[in-house]
Length: 374
Image (cartoon, rainbow, N blue to C red; front, side, top):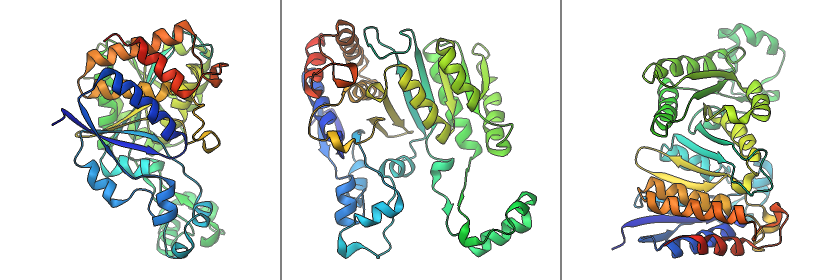
């Protein structure tokens, strides 16, 4: 019996390409694992009306963690048009499998390291090393939305909130509402995770990113809880920055920051900004981590036009494998893999198209594999 059971979820488009690259790495390090395939993605939406079949959810309850390639998501109307003809007008509504997995398994920490590697021609500055902690289950991504707005909700808001007066002449059918819902528990645990990480890795600060001067209640709750948690770590300063200012300061002085923590939507935006500082989404790995389960994935999309061409940069996927190894406690293997990635980028002999090279996805994976000191 293998030491680990790992779900294998290529998903859509180039997800298959980069997962093939990941397999080259895993074969090289000879990780003692069984890889369990799972159905997820656009073709299952089209053929079954369900991009995340129940059978896949049940399988995920039996494994130690999961590797995920990429997913295709489209707006509501476009998704409905691509359903099999016999499934249309049957009430099926598309929702992102990755967002649902985060909620089903309570993967509340979205950990996104953004590190610049020397030799990468795309980095903004080569001394950037930022880790983003994004709350992963609440906020705008919780999916509590209405269009048109139900009469009870409309009437209740009109009666209970003075600022709804602005909308008193807007008909219910002409209004859409997306709820930004925070809980105290979610705020506490994401900030706690950020401080714990900073403490364990001897990092100099934690920066909480919100907008409490405008979004007073939800951002205010996050900020108040961050201040409470910070008292447990007196050796680590807590910095408070509005999200708009943070975008500016990251461009101007990215080296000033080490650990960033924020809510779901702001975290999605800020982590992509950080990713671009270190070379773009081809270098952006992530871990969706909960108390008893974790899923690791690159943050890029499925890029359908490149699917099957083995053109895209697999480094984000391979860095996600590195994160998975750390999660499993295989720290020595994780360090060897990161050293191999660093060496490959520093030497610059093999580069994919985004780095102005002509090497393939698998060329890059094989080069990194060859550098792993076994």
